[in-house]
Length: 571
Ligand code: TNX
Image (cartoon, rainbow, N blue to C red; front, side, top):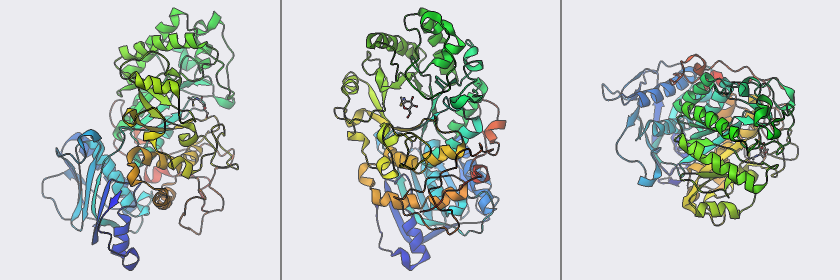
């Protein structure tokens, strides 16, 4: 981030401190220009104004809804351009580009003066990213679900910002343990704070099939009724899934659904033994091994099945990608596996979607638009490099950097260790553009942090593994290398803790971060105790919204984000 005009000593005045805060944003913005001595104050008469179109008005309503509870102000939403008063917040769609032509359409410009806040962007997504920045510029109490005293000050200045990568993702494995719609929506809100724009849902695995498919009803009804450890499991009906898609869309995240084939299919084979090699039904599986299951890849019925499944999923999914999994099909010889992938890729393309698959699909024939999802731990992969030479793009989730299910340290209770332990500095200190040798920078589509859930059962556990590593990966996806450094990041990260506490977000109090002292926090890293009961979160608005519409209110900010149980501690 370039910060200009920093001649004010922040310790000398509240306004100076406010100016210093202008750059205290994650992901680091492209350009930050403080206006020393200038401060905006949100007040009881503030109106949130927006260009009178559905997208901007929806973003304005979200912002107002977020701010009403902590401030206690009415914060009406009104169209921009009429009777604008001093002190208003305006969200304006503009034709003018706030970013380079190649930068996509998600950029924004935020201007804070004593007279008001103006966020300009070319798209509603850009406006929402500007709103997320504005939230971080307000005091941490803005994240509280109950009334707080204020004052609600924003440092004066201008931020001009746009993302580095078009794809900034997070994956939630809802197959190993099932998570209900409110929990997924809560996660969406947490991801949106850090300008993540894709939610990858790992919908199927050996332990459970989580999406209702009309033409093969037993997949969900039978295949969904299990999970790791033997619990009841669950699945999303098409209606549930649409609610997740609509909620994510209201936060400008695109859902990327994954049906993992040909391996990781035990639950599907329990439901439909005809798809199993030899037609033999396997037992249900509630353990955590991988690689033992596979579809009957030489059976034509398998491809009719896949055409039905991906066809229905494509109809439910507005986003451009369908993820076919493709990892760890250890029982298949390479040639049979490649033949399978070469049959499935065109099935997905025929639905009008782009193919995304774990990088084991790399050796298969190229198909226009396909993306290989790298999850390895080495800096070179000959098959991936070759797939890129043949036209593929790469999505980066190196397991030793971006996997949210790896333990932080030896004493982390949750998580695994096969890709090493990942403290937040390790998650942050790598460079996507040159991570893989022989993969040119311009073939990298973006980055994603996957959360596998073999060891994860509650929202608090999801959060503990997600924070603070997700913000690190989010910054790699958004901010250019010249705008990033660990020393600055850890300081900005420390500033997020009071916000997470106010919002009730559980996090790992990493010893690598200079968290502010709170006085009331318990010692330790904040890891939830084993056996902590699943948390009943507030019912989100998404629950009540009709399918296919963007729900109005943010259920999960403020009070709805409060998670009872152990709070994160400080170091
Ligand atoms: C590997 S990463 C897997 C998953 C496991 C994960 C656990 C990948 C594509 N496959 O099946 O859940 O490790 O860390």
